[in-house]
Image (cartoon, rainbow, N blue to C red):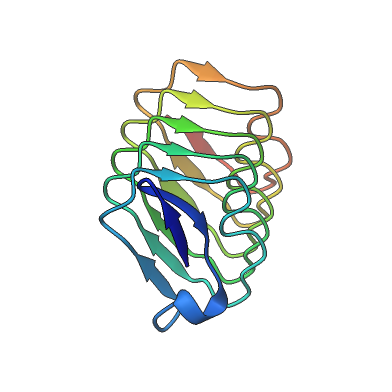
Length: 132
């Protein structure tokens, strides 16, 4: 794991504890930080307000993400996660293009503060029935 000025720059499989990643010190997460981590199941980042593009892309075991302070998410942030079924981001105001795309099992997304969504933000989620 590499952190620079409260920005999480990189994470590897060895940073996970039984598939879980937790850090309450960082406030930002870099592009591609959690990209393709096959053992990642759950993320808890209570103080993060911004995540970069491709941040949580292609994590085949990811089922849960807790980012209660998140306000800005880049492009493709939560895409291609085979086991992600629901997402609740109460403070998110801006979501990049394809942010929640290509999640075969995603059924619900709760984004009560969302004001700006990029193009194709929810593209190709065959089981998505609720966006609020």
